[in-house]
Length: 298
Image 1 (cartoon, rainbow, N blue to C red):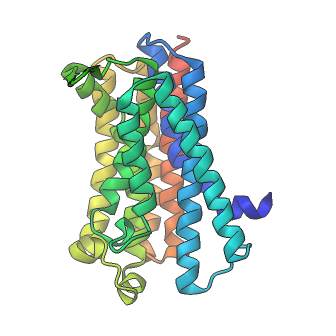
Image 2: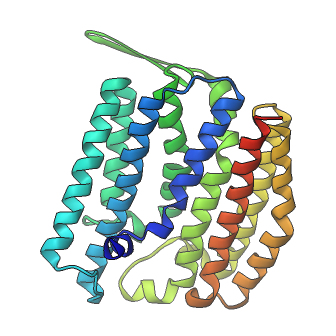
């Protein structure tokens, strides 16, 4: 069990668990129904697929750098195929419980997850990786969970052969974009930090990420802008009344976040600096999630 947890890097799954918990808290606050069968099925599919993409990443990287994955190549592939099968079955069952919007989004997620490190042009080697990862974890996960529980709340999908129609609730979508901007930007910040620290090493393997194009100095400034936008989005969401006022206490994390940010910018060496951005993600998202959940009881 320990080997498989290391192979799938279980400690990195906070990027999907925090948005999932936040979505449930927001749904309860806004009086949305929760279908626990669909929610559980989605959680299994989401979590297992997250593990799968990490395993694929480590498996492919190990072919280039010779890193030990803890298993033979055949065993590593077998684990990937098994988890991918579980995630696929969960996804298809969720479609059965809901509608084809979930199928479309699920196919997009599967495609992005697999192409992130595999294929002729892996997403992780491109300058738009930060955007893709942020949107996938910060917006797509909450969108699927909300739609699975409340079809039509954001997008109303109707299929009457041979016609397909989709209606968008623009007001709810705007609220949605504001509420889940924090996890989106914070997820992007993790990849941005990783790529900023790895510029020199990445160039050697022909990986040209966003910091390569904008430079370390601008990447550091961009990181600060992401944090400012995170706090601004929380204030806006509270002002609009779509999350509890208690969420404003998330602003109290700013001094610690700034301290970690300054520590990160001091060296920009991955083994020394990267941990500070992970700490910032956990600090902000933990308080944000907790305040939204507690706010439901006040």
